Length: 438
Image (tube, rainbow, N blue to C red):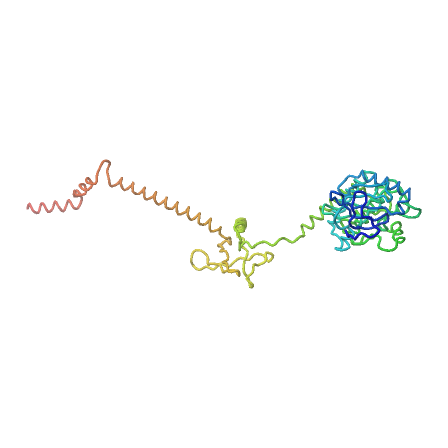
């Protein structure tokens, strides 16, 4: 909110508050930035001298302040103090830091559909609390809505009035801002909570289009359009246009209630926010073939294990040495048959790091650590099996060479005896002996 230095005619102290800056001026008086002894900052409004002399205005002002004390809710500026008997009546509300909705849109342009719905939902919820206190704001407009870090806040209840009161301060003079007044305010009829609903619809249209739904022009032209012409909602998002049009109905009975508005706008805000999240471009992902940390290696391994059978890995490298985009689709890496077991080493990528090897099925092997563990288990099992076979063969050799209870000496003695002659050998020996005898 813009601040200005105090002028010569401005007071320096009002009640227990010290004034520091001017925040603005309106039809009822001047608003100052002040603080109390504890340092709490307030927005303090001092009534104009000519209105302070009007007893009818003083009575109405007293009723408005009494009604404002009953308002409970986080979407309004809380009333802190007031003095209705002073020469110039004043009241102080909680100071809300942040720009007004009017300044926000004027400087940065129209809000998105999600932001408009979110602001509208918060304002509708605040109006529920205002109307439950029996108060109608009657001048809800973008400049009376502050966008604080904790959410939008409704300010300036200076012309607020109890439900059913007239809008005329003097004959033929309507209180409020042209373009945001309801038709019943222009005609001088009684105000109701539906009056604030009309103003809220015009405020949401301004937030979405940076313009009033009834255009620009003199006060007389604007008031005529409000009563007799339909609002122009070109530029209002399709998700919000039907609800805004219902708020701007000429007949107060045809407008939705603040509670209905709050619920409906919350649904639109959630849906529009989800739509923005869906169209948001994905964050850049690290190439799994070039991990930069242990976490990246595990992620690449998980992707390898989840890849379907026969699906080739993504190809790295290229004419510029970069990584091929995932949108172009993975291409299989050619494997040359060299007549040896295994595959030929793949060419290095543009970053100088060797590309991962591929098998005949196109799947990449597991990480080296897992391969070393498997190789170690295989070697240990092979050694154990070999030792078991050797032990079994040794036991069988002892069983054939050594009879039960025998020794190595017995074996040598058994081997010294000649084998008994059998067959042809016995016949030759018999014939030689007969020849010697003859």
